[in-house]
Image (cartoon, rainbow, N blue to C red):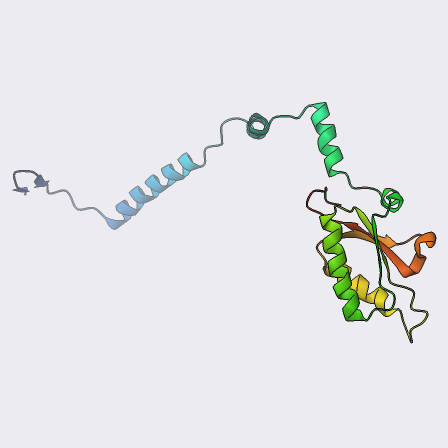
Length: 182
């Protein structure tokens, strides 16, 4: 039995078909699903090495390869001074904290580092003393060490040479706006 329903634009036609068994419907569904899975499981074109090579070539096309002189310049810019080079650098400014309280020392350190960075100092010396005249440990040495850990302008640091105060003084590399980071 066939029926037709329609309008000026569309026309639907219903055709009576033989009844299907649910098992047949599931078999058709499984066949279609397997066919889609086989299509998706196709291996990628080319070998994995080719895919990697293409990715590397794309990167090289985008960024290029620096020549030898450029590589040397880049390496020099990134190079950090060795410990010996840092210790051998001349001291550009000195701050003596002797006789100050902890609060006075922190204020003095803040002003000192602000000035040192503004003057493009590379290395400064902080004399805090060994604490020989205080009861207990060296208070200013601990204050200076804690302050330096929090200070963004303070770079690497170390114990001063004996001629500059030894254990009672600390040298610090200053991080400034116009200098390379250390």
